[in-house]
Length: 470
Image 1 (cartoon, one colour):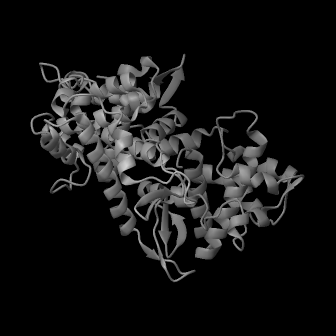
Image 2 (tube, one colour; image 1 turned 30 degrees about the vertical axis):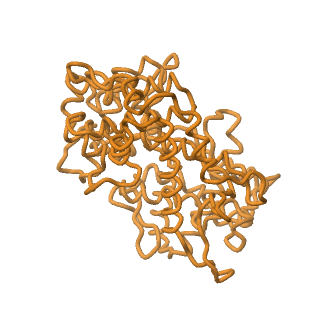
Image 3 (cartoon, helix red, strand yellow; image 1 turned 90 degrees about the vertical axis):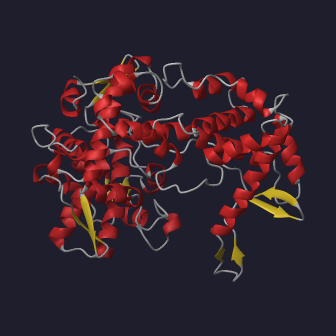
């Protein structure tokens, strides 16, 4: 959700106003909700100019906007489900964590206050018309125009400078002095630099930010030869994380495909465990697991460079369930000692890891050893059992008492009844976020990155601030 720099400025302005007016928790929450509605109402006026800017809550705010904005009703907390957001703190729920880490806002006794990286007074004044409108219950359309300078998509050099310093850990001259910043600030700057260098090296391919980063830090020789990447230790961590991401995504897609085969609670097409095992086993290739491993794309070159086996599997196999099984096998092979540098392997397996975890790459590697000389369809059936068992473990871990009925409530979409499975909804198969696309978007809003002819580039200011050239 935290994809716009303007909201970070908004909450910083609210925090400064709240401190000036000594607003308590309730008053801060009321102000946050009203300002978020106003931002969405401003978007209503400007969205035709640039559809890329899509303010949070704009769809729900439209019904409160005719000739005037019914601000009190749209932001009201009495009936949250009928307001612009069913969450009591609105979209601050998503921005609050990042804002406090960045130091743009602090929370004291539940109330918002300026953080250690407070919004400059020169920019804070631009929000004064919006904050004034927040005191009105009904806002005429003409009055909204007076606050239009803070609508999404309206540029502000002051905002850009301020958040560039905050996000890239630099001073007013664009210089990074490590002693002036916290460890997490330095880590964020390092990731910005890694992404910037990846764009400089591979941005011409026209891929998204995440795949561009993969091209630089996961596969190929850049990590051992590039004069910038080799000086940034965090790059090895990103290699481990993005490699692990293939296995995580494979499990997620495989699980979603399995659940899609199950019928609903009304008894139509409910499914037995054996039918689910057969669903995946019947898609398995002929031969043994050992033979299938021998047919996987090569993981490393003779000189030790990581080869894009996972990319090749996705290109060759598309969205077939067995493609995900092959990705899991590739991840298991990469988990073996000596396959990855120690610092990469530590992140790939999990820094806090003490033993094999359910469904992690070493778990799959254990299955490989057990099933090596057995048919692939036996392994496929076992993976189904493992997914069902993990689903049950997760559901039991979330078991809660339902205050409405006094009974137990299980938070799961897949349920077992009379030895047959039914579902209450499908599972999502989208990738677990790495937040690299959001970071790239922030870089673009800050003027560090740009798009030219459909390709990402690093701007002159980006090259200077992020030190992406050597």
